[in-house]
Length: 178
Image (tube, rainbow, N blue to C red):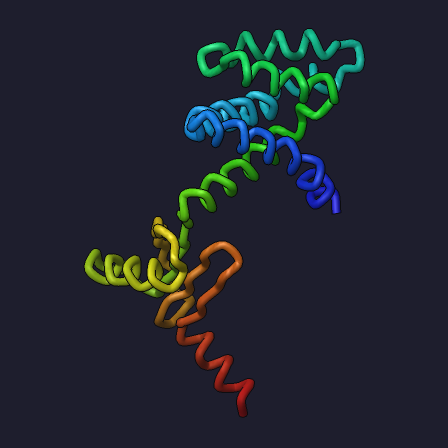
């Protein structure tokens, strides 16, 4: 429940950052800054400052600007200032994750995880990428792993889509139909 609430709070900020970056044709720079800011916020040395009620928004933004200075411009500093003033800096990891999703959707790009019983050779991976690109209508980045417990076949996860072509999955479907 807390995760959904954090995502709900982060969404308007992520949308605002995405729209600003898209207008400026600066998606990569914003994505990098948000990733870096999210890492800084989660650092064990920075967390106490976020949780300390005596630390002002101005002090927090100065700290962030000092750390992130190489990746900041005026718009990005203003964005972080708004987050600090509204006590939303802890949302940065969620904002960054949502921003990455928006970029992937915009670029028609998707990460696909493939789990197989054995290591897939390069030719099979290439054919799999071609077929998944057609089916998902997105550019596919394939990430393969091996799970000997599958017995055979593959299990494909692309976002919310799961394609179970494993032997175990086929046997389970056969059992259900009987």
